[in-house]
Length: 106
Image (cartoon, rainbow, N blue to C red):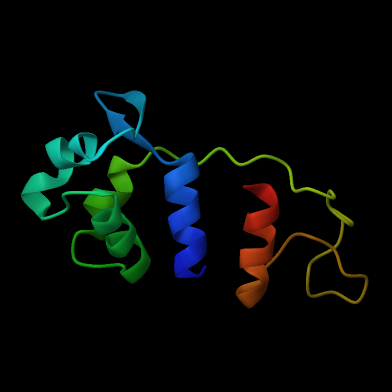
């Protein structure tokens, strides 16, 4: 995914995992209290760490709650066939086209 896609996902759908609870990231203090000792003090530091898969990626990834995406606008074409098959389904490896799907689901 592109930097723009990662940034939009984290700003819109990003929630923190603290004490086994899902907490919305409303300000940078939520991030600083959990990841401050790793050098991640704000949302842009978190975006940079996730996008570049930096040295503290594992801690940053474990800090985030899994995203809850909605169904894509316009729906799926055909769920039975793979994306790279002749019939052109929806499941499978999209490679560069993942940004378009995430933007429809976000």
